[in-house]
Amino acid sequence: QSVLTQPPSVSAAPGQKVTISCSGTSSNIGRNFVCWYRLRPGTAPELLIYESNKRPSGIPDRFSGSTSGTSATLGITGLQTGDEADYYCGTWDNSLSAGVFGGGTKLTVL
Amino acid sequence: QVHLVQSGAEVRKPGTSVKVSCKTSGYTFTNYDINWVRQATGQGLEWMGWMNPDSGDTGFAQRFQGRVTMTRDISISTAYMEVSSLRSEDTAVYYCTRNPRYTSSHDYWGQGTPVTVSS
Image (cartoon, rainbow over the protein chains, first blue to last red):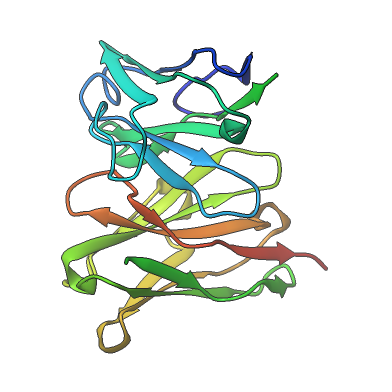
């Protein structure tokens, strides 16, 4: 059971927009920055969003992040088949004194 | 460019231990923390702990305390993570990550090291 809650799967057509939610509590998302990661088979995981809404260099502006209270959201616009992957949110939990992740969301581009 | 290159796949019997290495390059090893994250087959990411390569300070998720050790060799910019008293539930891919100090942001990841625990 993951500390952060994500939907198991989302799907959308190429060119469309999708959002992935990440729900937490006041001890994690409510107090700390959120990061988003992409995991694709056969490749190292990749940081997509840090400090809740910043993109590392090389990550296109099709990817965006936001937070509100104890929830975070990853947005992906202009979906491409290459975006199919598992997406994870992560942050720090002050009560656990530990890093925590969501259970992951599988994105399917139909 | 920043690179984290991990050691190869391992197979161990229950009750034994495994040590995974993470060789870094492209940045100053002591300026960033190293974290370890694992993923069991079909499961999500699980944070294991962190190490400050400069001081050697470490911190662990509660479930790994006493069973996981994190060390480093500054001379070769390499971090190590050892898990002892292995059980079948430890079968997973283990990743090292680079973290800017005092953040939970894993900005670069190793390629992962599969560890299989089986009798």
